[in-house]
Length: 145
Image (cartoon, rainbow, N blue to C red):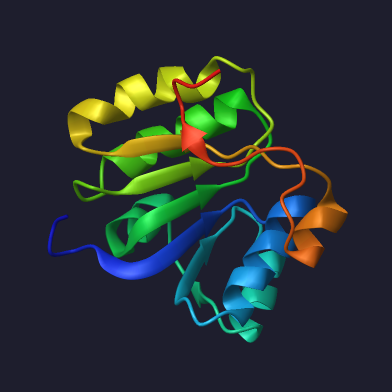
């Protein structure tokens, strides 16, 4: 891991499910850094104890574990492209977004030359995030079907 990476957990995408998940992280003892293109959920998370990142690149330079919960495959790919420009070697990206089954494996291939691991950690319903539960999936190597 590069010296610029710290023990903070990053969370990108603070929509309906992502905000609930990030609020659980912020309430934990884990230092949490958040980013979203919409300011209101970031403000809410900062009030709950998280730290705001100025950009995806800023978050990636600060975190060794990055959770991604954005709208679709294209947004996940765009986020990963930005992460790869700033993440340290050994960074782990957890894809929680609902994406096509082959997307996490394709992203893992893109990330591997940068020393970044991508894990498939797709989520269930918003209520599960609020309860701190993950009902349908478990994080696993992206190449696992």
